[in-house]
Amino acid sequence: MGYIWATAQVGGDLWFPDQGGDTTNVIRAVNICNQCNHRLECAEWGIANERFGIWGGLTTVRREQIRRKRNIKLPRERSA
Ligand code: SF4
Image 1 (cartoon, rainbow, N blue to C red):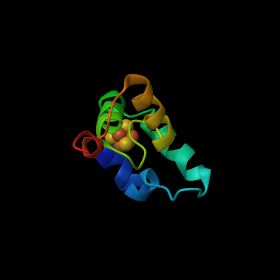
Image 2: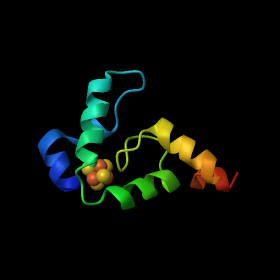
Image 3: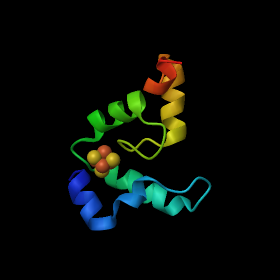
Image 4: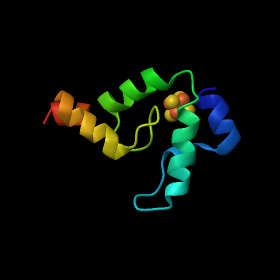
């Protein structure tokens, strides 16, 4: 499975849920990510580069926790 397969099946909006919206779609996206062959590299990309969305099964909140723990700044924050 991967992004193309998953988005073709359920639509890319699933990975960019509205803040404070229905958590059912978040759980659904995370479950799909957890079966994806690209999960690990996708998660690392998301941690290093993405503020929004679900990447490699990690939510925005979880990625922020990992960034803080690893002392990683997003690209836009690095130049500030
Ligand atoms: S791990 Fe990444 S590529 Fe795979 S389904 Fe999730 S968001 Fe898409």
